[in-house]
Amino acid sequence: MDQDEYGIGEILFKGPNVMLGYYDMPEETARVIEPDGFMHTGDLGYADKDGWLYLTGRKKNVIVTKTGENVYPEEIEDIISGYAAIDECMVFPYHDNGEETVAIQILPVKEVVETRLGHEASEEDLDKYFTDLVKEFNQRLAPYKRIKHVFVRKQDFVRTTTRKIRRQDNPVSAETVIGFEE
Image 1 (cartoon, rainbow, N blue to C red):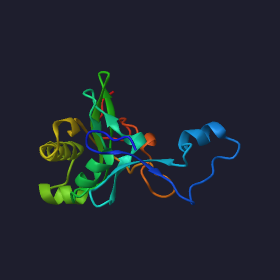
Image 2: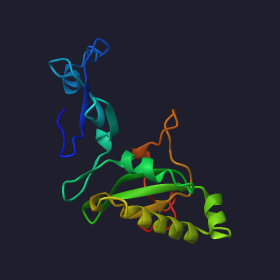
Image 3: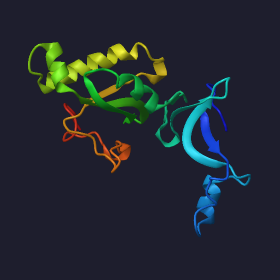
Image 4: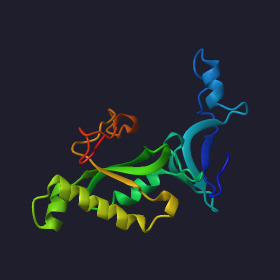
């Protein structure tokens, strides 16, 4: 597995349970299975000194900053989703003036925010609350991982049949997030 400077790389797998290939699709098979039998999983991770494997995210989800640093959305999501006011979130690349930056969409737990504010939360209250929360959270992140854009969702995320968030089907627009201006 090719690794970055932090030891993170794509996880390859080999064994009797790896498929032989895609039926009648030799080019696709060659893309995912190496000649020596190792299969590309699309998962990123690293092994510790004891041989334990840790998953850090999916290869297709990596955000590459202008300085060439890799940001793994799942790593940030796992930490920030622990806040009681956040039901779910999705970290994604946001294109800002030709530059790929780190952004987040947050599905709020409005009741928690209202309890903390002491009154019913308007859209402006929610926007300010989560912008301030992310600013505070960013202080714990390396500068290249910091979230530059915060979008609070008006409605639930679009999901797969297994209830996972469909990253490609949750665009930022005036219909989906608070305060978005095109």
